[in-house]
Image (cartoon, rainbow, N blue to C red; front, side, top):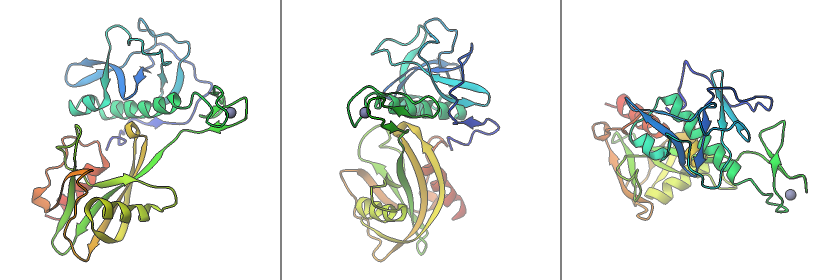
Length: 282
Ligand SMILES: [Zn+2]
């Protein structure tokens, strides 16, 4: 999965004392786009401190990969990226299967933090500009004292199993670039429900099935959607007839082990769960 980057180590602790040094990566982010230079053999580079057009003033500390600090460039109001770099959607990088896993993980996480910083410029309580807290990764309002921490959107990935027929439910989105790719039932946790409630509700809404025996598998940070994903297995009970939510899904089917090709890359928790089930149920 995208976060499995050993022997590299990702450090997300906030480092208020960190200072940019020559060669540190700098992420220029605009929405879901980031400034990159495509390199040979499906790699990509991001601008670095010391490159032309990369100022050290105004950089925001993001995280470190091993001992290298990574930085967020200030939003320059739609200015172009440094010379030699182009703005590319993170999805394009993924579809091109570009970059090492640790590089993609850093890019996804940078997009997540950049999105949060971009949406936390003003205080939601009193409307005044926010400033960096200083000692924590938080934005602070000096006018009313409001402090805002980075936002995560909890979501579930659900592998619905039918043990009697040795099948699982595969879905495809109705629209978008990921529409042709097999996935599992998924959705955001709503306020006032447990993760297990969310599993039951999402399965019911998306494919019209009732499930039991809900078991946690693993979690995954998925920064480009601001998510923290939790994966669950569960078993269908009662009528296994799928009633697809046609607005959200273009396809929803029961599939056996020989009908699961997997996704084109190994970045997602969804893919790991699909392939693990396939490989242990042949
Ligand atoms: Zn305020």
